[in-house]
Length: 133
Image (cartoon, rainbow, N blue to C red; front, side, top):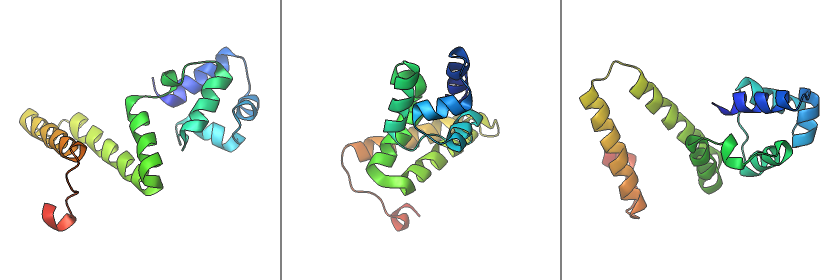
């Protein structure tokens, strides 16, 4: 279940209006509506924490692994890094779910991503665009 669905379900369980929920979570009504419609996600972990506290749920209930990763990227690399991460995840989801790539190609892409991740985790230097091309 994604964040928008979870948020809407929590609000309806508590029998709250969006106005009440927005006020209780400390965000504007427009922002809250965007969350419930799936048009946006909170930018900062603190907002997720405030929402979890308001609804008395565990923070992990609200977050998927992808959400955690994007939040961490935002905290480390800022908004530009966050946008890049969101784009990468969306493109990979389309690639794996699209059905046009063979299973071998999907395996190769997954292995390449895993290798890139492990290389950066080891602390090796980033490759420049020239080195990749």
